[in-house]
Image (cartoon, rainbow, N blue to C red; front, side, top):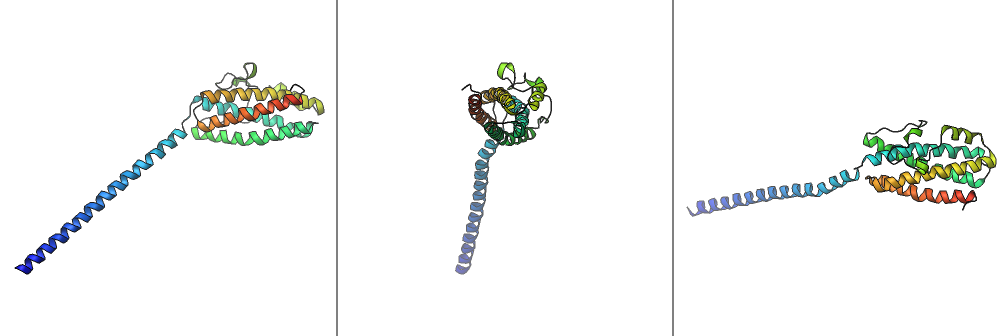
Length: 214
């Protein structure tokens, strides 16, 4: 009897120990799962917050893309029409800065499911769009007549017209960017707007100096 009793008690101890291990394992798994969901939630929330945008962000991208496209069209004319090395250098810098920004803003609009402005479209009627306000109530965009006239100029005449037109163009962009900075919600768009304000304000001063105004 003594031997059986000992055997039975030993078995009971073994079963109890095994049960304790199973419960501990289950409890640990549940804790790990909870911890995983808890740690993942802030990341998901941050991602959703980072992608938040409003109507002003859309208007900014849809307005600034054609604005940049026209600036590139003007800048590319300088290569074989400008007489001043300084004007040619400025035009090259404008192209280098604004071409990648067009790609960036195009990517935003596609991600948001919004229409991407097509190159060559007539955007002269868009000056009333949110974020499109600029110098003298316009976005600073040149008319088809302005662009046609610029293409006919060469040498110093081109230099003067290019600089005067680009000053107005930049002023429009700076004002558009200022609206985005105050009314936009999408962080990257507001950061790009800030870069536009900083970079193009400096170029306005540079161009006015070349025009003998600063």
